[in-house]
Length: 164
Image (cartoon, rainbow, N blue to C red; front, side, top):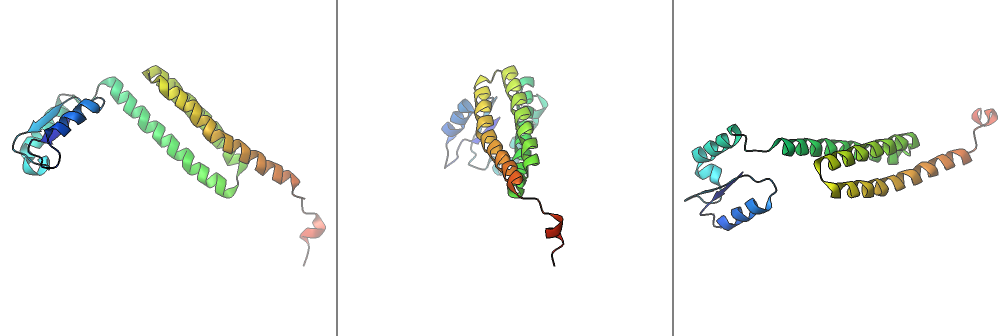
């Protein structure tokens, strides 16, 4: 729902109408007469009443929209977790953590692609493939680099470890 002041000196009612048209899932537009930019301050009772009606009638979202929003939040959570893991893994040069991330990235994007197909967001499947390629290539390259360098380092012999 969009609540807009009819006498807004900066953004007139046409802005509210435009937002209502362009925001996917926007269910309702309320233009409050004789109200400027800060509707909630100038008409607090009217503003509160509109919000109560909006929430009580369930106009907010449909079941599919709620599923999609829940899905978006969970994907964002997983993406943030993988990003933070990646920072740690690359700073430490931890190949095992990078492998774990690679598996996590694969599972995350496969699940996201399946949900995208279920919700009919077909474009997102292509995005998932591109994101996997974009993030997995540096991971695989660094995993190989770290493992190759581990093999090339000579192991300390017992005589080297007892140096004084």
